[in-house]
Length: 66
Image 1 (cartoon, rainbow, N blue to C red):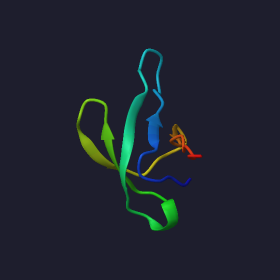
Image 2 (image 1 turned 60 degrees about the vertical axis):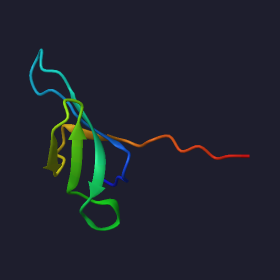
Image 3 (image 1 turned 180 degrees about the vertical axis):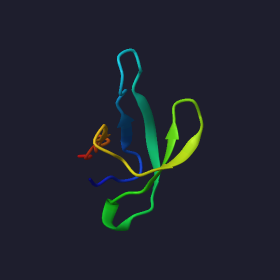
Image 4 (image 1 turned 90 degrees about the horizontal axis):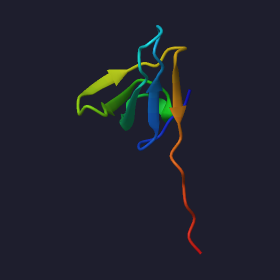
C-alpha cells in the first residue's frame, strides 16, 4: 500500500450498519509512501494509521495543465 499527502484513507465498516470512516492523509511517515500515515478524519480529529485489510487508499486526482 502506497499513498501521498492529499490522498484519502477509507476504513470500511466492519459490521452491518457501521459507516465508513474517511480521512485525508496529511503526512506519510513511512518510506516511499508506505504506512504509517497521519490522517485527519472528517470529524476533525487526527491519528496515526497503519491500514489493515479493511482499508483502501483513494488517490487524489492529479490534473495536468495545458
